[in-house]
Image (tube, rainbow, N blue to C red; front, side, top):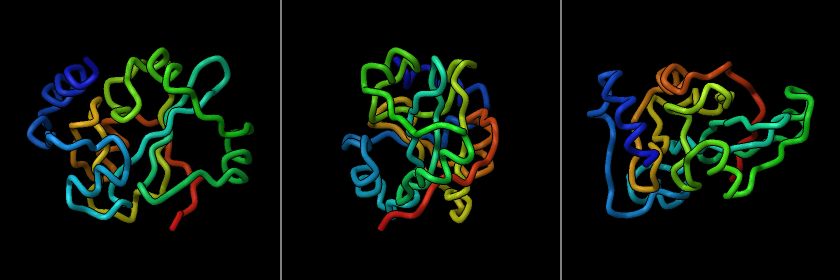
Amino acid sequence: MSFEIVRTYFEEESLSERIRSFDDSCATVEEAAKTIGVIPARIAKTLTLRKDDGCMMLVMAGNAGIDNKKFRHYFGMKARMLTAEEVTQMTGQSVGGVCPFATSNTVAVYIDCSIQQYETLFPACGSPYHVVELTPNELFQYGNAVEWVDVCKENN
């Protein structure tokens, strides 16, 4: 169901031709990079984190991870991931296909600057078998992001 909602969203934005569908899973950064044929860093991964009584989404480069000190300093709280069940309850999406597109207005989306070094990235599209190719600024725009943040570090 999530993919249908996201596809409709991109149709309304005249960007549905950028959606790519695959038979192989893109549920993890490694799977997506292999399936698409790009370096893992170009997979825009979305983490769903607890925020007050709800949640927030943090989108970052596939080779990045949360820098706990930066995150705590910026958001004033510890980064705590939601369980898979909580993700589905709060976002209507399932782990492996979580994306910032066509989400509830109650889910704040933040985009980490780690994605800015790439011309295009591949975030999920509401399903482990669909991605969309977007520039960092398009990801920010169509993800209805609140703001750019610098809360991640590159992992090797």
